[in-house]
Image 1 (cartoon, rainbow, N blue to C red):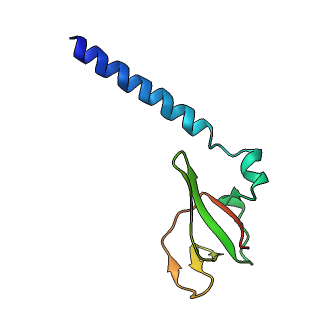
Image 2: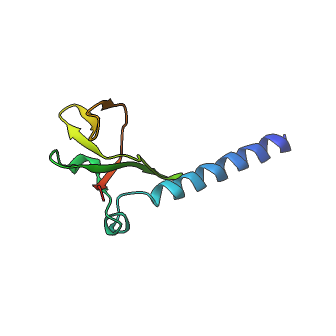
Length: 92
């Protein structure tokens, strides 16, 4: 029975840590100050850097992309890409 309690306690602690990490990635002024914006407001008329920003970190694509009506394309090849970003910033 002690093993079950210990396991339950470890699981509860892990959930608490995960929630704390998720709180740190909510849209904030810190992300905006780094140039990242929510993908919902991404423009259609320019090259953008796309990323998924979550508790693991920032995972950005290594090539410029453009927003189209139903997704994203590579700005260089015009090939459609299967990527679901959370943030964008100007391609430098």
